Image (cartoon, rainbow, N blue to C red; front, side, top):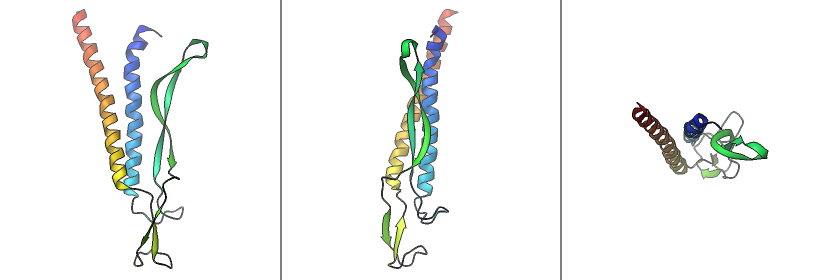
Length: 143
């Protein structure tokens, strides 16, 4: 890896984190919007979605590799969290017993995830800004 490539690998790493967290924030916003949807086109209530992150790998010689960032590879349905049954006979989607199957979205958990994602985004942005400041100082010294 050349010196310039090493120098800019920091920017690429934090840029990959920014892109991955942007996907995550979008999915969290979709979850919050779907938190009260009891009937979807697929049938049943809205199902919470989660983003799957994977490391970005760079291959080195002799079959070695190392992580150089992260990426959001896919969005999957959360099949682990159960739906909640709420007794509301007046709801249009209530069953014969007056129960409504609600989405498996917990808005408080989604907000906590949103805060974590925003903090990660801010940390990556700060890393890029610090790199650019250091590069500017190095250029100023070289003059």
